[in-house]
Amino acid sequence: MTEIQSLARGLKILDLLGQASDGVSITELAETLKVDKGSASRLVSTLARYGYAEKDEVTRRYHLGPQVVGLSRSVLARLPLREAAKPYLRQLMERTGECAHLAVPAQGKALYIDQVASPATLRVNAEVGTMNPLHCTALGKALLAFGDVEIPSTLERFTPRTIKSKRALQEHLEEIRRIGYAVDDEEFDPGVRCIAVPVFDFRGKAIGAIGISGPSTRITPERLPQLAVIVVEIGKALSERMTFTR
Image (cartoon, rainbow, N blue to C red; front, top):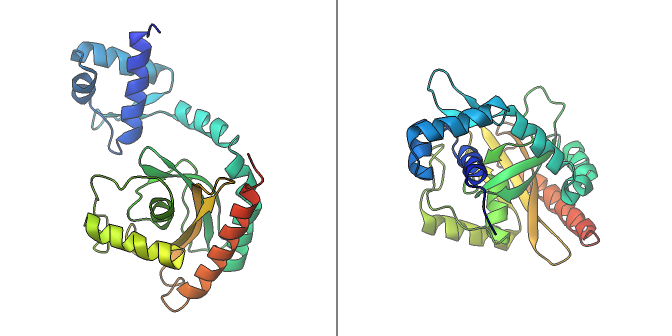
């Protein structure tokens, strides 16, 4: 099949922008695409003109533009898991008092596809479309432990509690599989604890993860086991629901 080279390069740029949290420079684009800087500049400028990329005038680096968010929401709205999970997210928030989140694996990260916010003044929100690391978030670790997602090649440190060793992470994932749920104990954000479990489909495949996030002053070590029971219960109920969704 004949490939349209300029279109292929434009799609590659979108992939690069999606993977780079701090943006991409013209030089980096040119090196990756194996083109001169002028060609890279024209390609990304065209994407920016239509809203698919945007330039930070201070750093002069490019990021994904607002048009991509609109497309993402359209795709997310059609996801069977997202639609099926809505009442379970609501129930999870009501029974725990904390923000409830739903995520799926995407590009080596946990992509948040829905949430129900807590009414509490102090709460931990995660906007739909947010992509967080797998190795130091509860949702991400649930996907790693029970899914077919690979451990990231680099384990970036976000707090002093972040697991940096692959061996330590593998042992930690074994423990998660044993107890049935994952915990982020201030490993991604200081002062935040999270609990998550996998969501399985009719094939028994982990297709996502559901959980809660809240301030560590409320999700205390003493309260965590009680909250975990609720998360596990609702996660199992959602998995049972997904066994009838194909």
